[in-house]
Image (cartoon, rainbow over all chains, first blue to last red; front, side, top):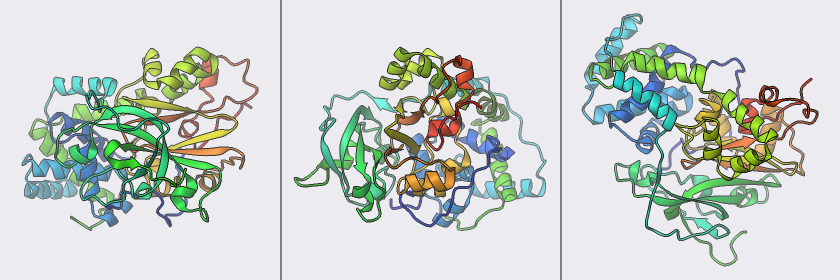
Length: 232
Length: 199
């Protein structure tokens, strides 16, 4: 989708604001919102691609102005509702309850297996790399062009690289394909490559900064061989 | 799709309500929330990446292994896991400076840097660092990269997790690994900073 989350090259946001004393979590609710991801993942509500797709469904104005973990809230709320795990009316009612009684306790439950899962997940991760019998169609050194289209739904094909030509500098093997897994499909593993783009290719020779490149990772269906005479 | 911007109180209440419902459904526990917070507040953070950097500065063979397979090299030090399943380390030189971003969300190498600071996830950084990194590093981070040094930006669009091996500062020949690690900052491993020589 051509979403507002796809920020690369957007102008006008002003300078970065950094807080050198910023804690890892700025509020208690951020801890819970952070923990939603691992918990919902274990419950089978989504994989990482679908989770990102859930964030991209936020209204653009809210996406740009809300704290980051609110994006996570939005995604798990979307999938938990879609799966019928939570009832939206009950969520509204319980939200009103906690608004009126912010210190009201949470339900108590113990789950040693979930705790063990958390530790194991942090330690070992959830690799997205997959074995495939499909031979890679491209190699390091190839000049490729990113397909210039506007797919609906989740994709990692950012707008600022679409239609642009660059050179493959790394080949990584096959990974879960977000354009499938993020849209309710299967893993459909595809080869991933790192493509190097000259600044001038991305932003035009007039406005691009000299002496710089941008690397962007692409899944094989995102690219085609560059036509003769394309930018190096 | 709501267009309402919620207050912190509203978001906090909604998160708590959802948490309560997911506890009732057997999906979450408050213990799991506390444990995850503890991990990223106390155990997993940029001190781990700094340890890897210091090892790379002092052990040329380790440095080679780190640059050819960062995931395996970090695993030698017991470092790795979630959001660092496939890591790639980028070595800064006198000719090339590297900086990482994620323009599409907030991808970041958690096992070596911990959770990202908010500025890394904000639209300001994500929108501009790919378009004018040299200007942004100078204006927003006070980092002057000479025009003769190439700037390479790495947009973490796939599940590869990039991070930066900064230049070792001059005048640190007599420092041991622990003392070197203490010099290494989070921003130097993102590429929005460099490692300063000890005073």
